[in-house]
Image (cartoon, rainbow, N blue to C red; front, top):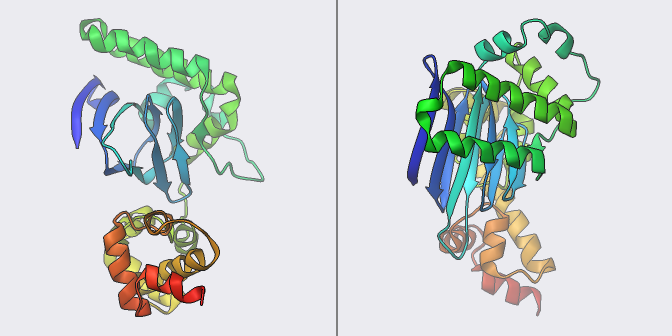
Length: 280
């Protein structure tokens, strides 16, 4: 649940936001026509997108390309307020800032950068901290200042060895990207995402996604993914010493009681009974 939300607009676009949200929460971030830089001032979260399934810690950031993304904020034993700074990177604004440089920034690379996570860095942290002054004094903010702050961010990313990520982001904003369904499923089989969430990551309607899924896997999304999760849970029960709750989280169930019900329905034994049986 969002506790606090302030933002600055550039022309008609919301371009910089400050949000505080409480956990647990799964937040859908849909950036169909823009890229996005998200800095996490505190807490821990997980980024789930068509290309990423990665943990993000306090004072780290992610540089997201166009498409649907999910931020899963889950604290198992406590409610924690997560504070984020979000900077939207619209093609219109980047074209204005880089009107002479974009042709040279778009380069062909033989290998795509898979991770766009920006590790903890003093320069990035200082840049984010500098925005607090403007949130406290919004009357100083205008379009010229916002353009300068976006350019400052991009220069910092380039100077801190994230030039390939910036180049890929710009490339992605000006090109059509094909998302492969099987790659999304392989990445998120054990994520806590609904079938509708997976369809969004593939840029498909729910009905089109289900048809394409059955054509590829010869199974329904719910049955295929549930089967995979239970098989992994059985393996962890046999080979690891993780407790039942941790196994539930590892296999994409955020509710251990629901995991136990699904497991017993599928296997005929509760997870505890299954584990005990393996020791006999």
